[in-house]
Image (tube, rainbow, N blue to C red; front, side, top):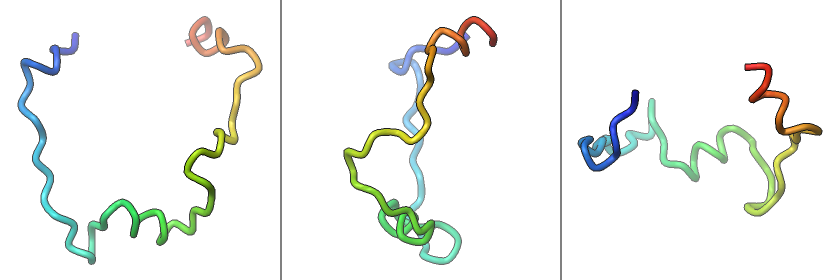
Length: 55
């Protein structure tokens, strides 16, 4: 069972070092991802109830 967010400590992440970890904008650039910010998802479900019923 998960705890409510109010009972958990926030995670403090270290700053990106540019060698092993990168900021979000750089990570998107490096992954060669090219799409508009508001572009719909490429994968859509014909029947949204299937994953819920099957899993």
